[in-house]
Length: 263
Ligand code: NI
Image (cartoon, rainbow, N blue to C red):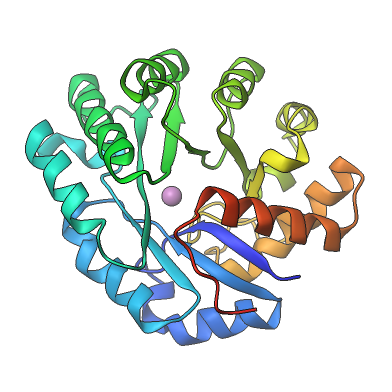
């Protein structure tokens, strides 16, 4: 069974300079599905063009919390997201969410953008890719109040508390493991992942960010996903192959619009 990188940014440098090579190196590691995640409305044409060019690349559309300062107002943003989601390779909304750690955009702008994404997700019945940092309570509150128990999605690049893990699991969300899991000082996070059932796990690189060990400090790319999967398999006491098939099945369950023609 092949792996899927459930979150990468193929339109970012340095991968953008050599997307065919990036994908070839990933294929050599049996990674045969990619979700390239949009971070700003201006990037929609680029991410959808990449998805159109490769059979096993899918895209999301959305505005990263950092970029919400100058984005469209709620209603316009909602309408644009719904319209763009009709693209056949667009399989989710994000990354969206809240980031009070950096606060590159005011909290109120982040919240209104997040709400627009949640509403679009309900209208289109597509999953959300959620980025949350130092904003756990507000994130869960908005998923509950705006999502009305129907929103589904993934907590991407999970590095939160056990409280956030449990809340997300209760809401039916998936939890995605990134390269952070391989870091020497990540014992607390590894402990938190012990409590995530196999049927709710996804794996991702978030490339070009957060390279796993032993590539830490270098630009990340989808081929490095295997390092995170090896670490997670060890942690969950399952074989590498079983974890590949489980996380790929989970990806296809959550991102049901993806039609994997790459087996
Ligand atoms: Ni990302």
